[in-house]
Image (cartoon, rainbow, N blue to C red; front, side):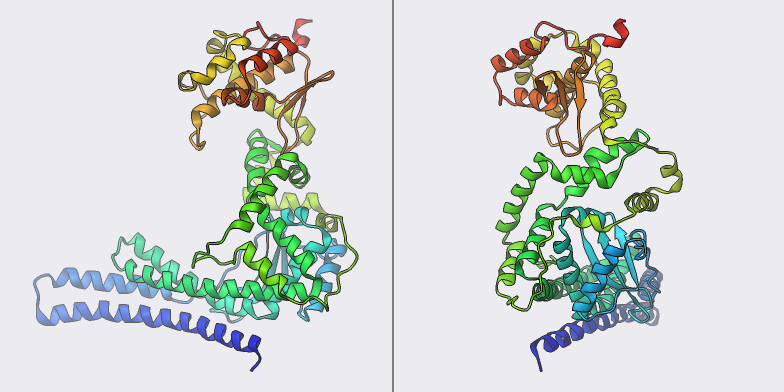
Length: 500
């Protein structure tokens, strides 16, 4: 028997054993729970009532939890209209042909920096259908050729029948954790045997999953070559958390103020920034150094995958001419897709109340009003100091922070006191300079910047460097003299427009 068919058989037997084993395990516990009340009644023990109630309720909860359910699949995003996106459709069809697999019945855009395939729907794996998800952020990160490689990896899962087994694994996972949830709600000690089985299940199923990733990588390499597959994997690992960071730092504050930015356009700016490039390199080095594998990890480490890829022959790979254009260029209806994703997550009512806004307008319309409000809230405290006094704050962070009023409580910063001080003084400097005629410049992933003639300042970074001791008091004071605020109070001057 060929090795790949042998491993497929092993995986199939293991998946079936986990599924059947869970039912046997559960039914044995149910039998025990029902036998204990029977035994207690027959022997006429004094506390038979408690035992009867415990046994019947416990058995009932378990039986209800393991009763088969139809898999109701909720789409992770808007369905891809292949007619409206002919370039992307052509890519998907081309990769499917090379892997000799049919196109999935349902293909979705998602808001994640990832791609996936699965077989969902039906009952206990029967009557399921193939689905695929492609993240818009992923398409902004990868080149056209790199997306080809990732799609080949995903179709490799279809080719190796991983998704068929995956539907059984998913069903078993759902059964186990639904049982645990129901037993936990009943505050039952019975959850502990199921915790043991859950750990056993995760160790075994995730071990299989890691092997499947190696095999899917092999499929991609054989079609598109080692270089492009390795490049795509490095980008995905190094950019882990990038979209979430962008969403939290750049998109959410705009949504909260009632505006709707162009999210896809903004993420392109974010991953093109110097800050992202620095973080990307740091994350890539960390990913390549990662050696420890938890038995509960679903994927191998990046270094393991790259080592395995280098051992695969790619002599038959048919890589076309290197394509520098990002994969997002294959999508023709980005604005419509963005809105559908927003509606899916936030609801139609919320999205319809938002006003569209361009990224270059956000500093003045969204950021500046927040800084101004923050500064006014703390004006009495700020006007006790002049800009030349700010270097003294470095040794009084706790004292200064205790006097700062926040509009809303904040608690999720590792050094809240330092954040409060740098945020307030940075906001005050932004307001002071903007009201003195400096222009605001900010794009996603970049630092807030104010410019006037040949001068350029990044207020929050400048203040943070001072408070942390990375620039000296003399350097700070020289900068204050240069921009004309050395002997001025920290509160902002009157706007030029208001002077007239």
